[in-house]
Image 1 (cartoon, rainbow, N blue to C red):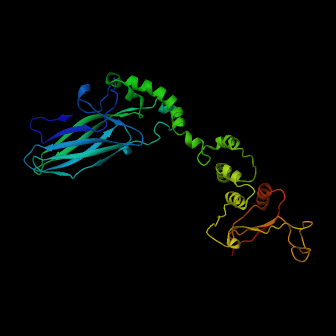
Image 2 (spheres, rainbow, N blue to C red; image 1 turned 45 degrees about the horizontal axis):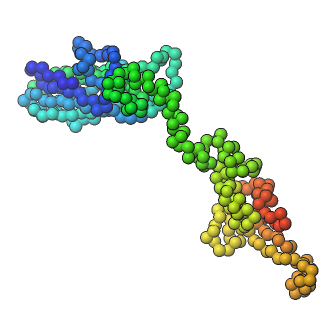
Image 3 (cartoon, rainbow, N blue to C red; image 1 turned 90 degrees about the horizontal axis):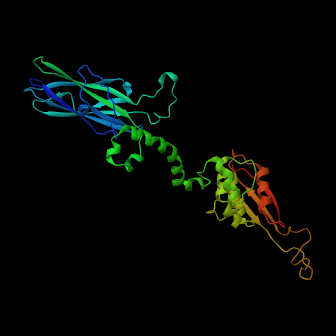
Length: 339
């Protein structure tokens, strides 16, 4: 919308960069001037969490430089807008563009309302004031009305012909169905996240645990439970082996695996195996292949080396070892904090 009159110092034009997808049936203009026809009113669409731009194009019609001042007022909150200009001086017969940025809170439609705030106001009116002052003292002030239309982003309007998209009632009506159906569509699009124990809602964990046959109950944090359910199949695959036991203890205790260390005694989770057949009649020769009071057959040692200020639940550790070791094996456990 452009304003030009004979004898004016400046001309003013407002250009909305975000147009409303649907026209509004009724319009109220906040201005000291007479109400403009609906076809001449400037409308700017606002969406929560996004910037909307109103370009202000000012042209100097005089033969000398002008000092400009731009401001916006209306029935919208003052913190909704901010102004960016190329300067305050406009040379003779030159044109300058300023940008008024409007932004509303991302949770605009989710904020609780008091009874006094109902119904929620979505249409706001305002006016832009541009003041021009010439060096010889002449001045002029132009007021240009505009509307701010707060609208939620709508996907369903994209599927309609243009003739229906220009009716505001249709857009609001479709938004009812979009609000009801889109959460279900979002769940289907992000179904992978619901089936991953690391990202699934907490209420889904019992189902996922039952899905992989995970029934272990213990004093575990939520993060530990998610990790154990996620890697349950790998724990099953290596059950009864040193690798499987170390991996299980790693997930449950948070201690590192330290696979890069060749010495088992230096690892945070060390498992020492000392298996022998023991006394076998007809094969064992006392004093050669067997000694009285020697090593126990099928026995292993578990050594945990946590940091000095690291707490471990020994009962949980023993429960895991008893569950994962072969039934014929025996073990001993040592927790030795590192200095």
